[in-house]
Image (cartoon, rainbow, N blue to C red):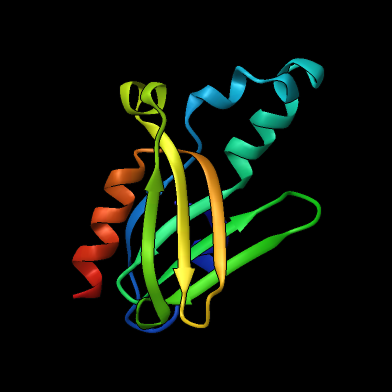
Length: 123
C-alpha cells in the first residue's frame, strides 16, 4: 500500500483496492527519451486507491497532485479502453464529480476492476 494513502486515512477508513500503471507505460516516446526513468518513477510514486469512504489518487514525485473525493460526490467512474487495452488489461479512468469536475488517469492497470469496486462501495 502506498505511503501517501496510508498517511491520509481517516477514522474507520480502510483501503479496498489499490492499483498502479500498466507496464505499457514503458513502451512510449517518453520512456524512450528518458531511458525508462520517468515511467519507472511514475509507477513507483503514483498511487491509485479506493477506500470504503473515498477515492484517493496521488501523482507526482517532486510536484504533487492529489485527488480525493468522497463516494457520495462522485457521479460516475468511466473507463475508456482501446482494442489493445482490452487485450492487455489497461485503460483510462475518467472520474466525473458532482459539479462537473473531471479527472482523467491514463494507462491504469485493471480499470474495470477499479470501476467495479467503486460501484460496489457506493451502493
